[in-house]
Amino acid sequence: MGDAFGCSMAKNRPRILFSEGSSTNAREMITALGLGGHTVDLCDPEPVCLGRFSRFVGHVYRCPISGTDPIGYLRFLIELLRRERYDVLFPANEQAYLFAWARDLLTPLTGLAVADFAAFQQVQTKTAFMRLLDSLGIGHPETRYARSWADIEAAVTTLGAPCYVKTAAGTASTGVWRVDDQRTLAALGGELAARAHAAEADEFVVQRACGGQFEQSHGIFDHGRLVALCCTRRLAEGAQGGASVKGGVVRPAVERDYESIGRRLNWHGSFSADYFWEEAHSRPSYIDADPRITEPMDAYFNGVDLAELQVLLSLGEHPARIPHGTSGAQSHNLVQVMLGAASDGSRLEVLRQVARVVLKKGPYEHSREGMTPVLVDPPAAIPVVVILAALLANPGLERRLTHGTIARYALGDAIPLLTRCTPTSAGLS
View: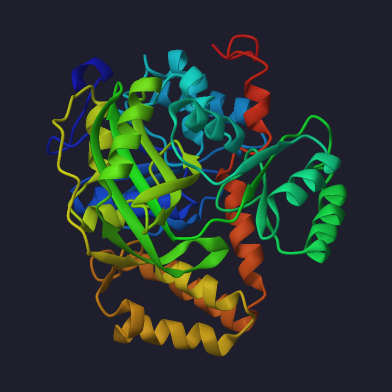
């Protein structure tokens, strides 16, 4: 398959181009592929993005922002793929949706493993995913849908507090608000009005808060066939509700759900979903889908190399089904640890958590660094030091750093835009 794309492999390694380099997803995938012997190149609007600082990264191409200029981003990418001979285009984040939309233009130029656009439309937004789960009889929290502020108020009244109000589209926990009482509901109303989010054209998900432990599932499919699955439990919370420490768990019930979803959508490539595990009933309650790989290093430590499987699928191979993976191996993310500690505005807490990571104390005693392993990838120390210095100077920068990074890779308003046109009508060829 490599020859079909002009494969020019150094030591039999394919040339890999990442869709972005700013997210923790991309940085962990760089680590996973680098440990497997690969070197990757990146597209990113920020030339000194997080992924730049790795010995496993070659060139960084400065590109338009995919969320604010998706057509410009795709035009840049197509021109780059025509000029260079990349064997694999790796969707490191929400660009997977964009690549599915333009798949017919991209697949003649490179190896790409994504599902078709119709399948993406059933999982890309929270509203679509909940409706898919209903059609398959798969569990999720009690849910109402809202298209106006009056609908939101009615849904909150019906479900009771606590509950969550969520925009249909959003990544990295953006567009999610917890409502505990009338005061927080009123504050949400003011925020939505200020953001012009409460227009009739918008759709929201309102869900009852559910109990259990927060976990994530990460799978790879080959045209509807589940190839691999790994589930991880959040052991400590970082910034924006992310996991600063996680550990592998085995969940046969999630595996059965994934098989159902894969068959229904004929899913191809990577797929992830967040859920709360209800121990008493041994079942998951799904809250969100990420139709791509999300932070794969804990799966890597538990014996499931998701990033490598994505590459193999992109090259046209059909990997055999691999076991669920081991359980118990733990990983941490020092950047998430620092950002999470800074969310309370405490310099002392930032230093205390960094010390615990370095000394392997508390929840970090048995875990390994998944995103910036400086002993095997020394340049990864640079962003860690820069972020630490910035947070010590001003812990309040945590929110700005987090949201500024998300803005460089999230699709945002580009998601509904793509449903209203085709690549041809948008001027791509």
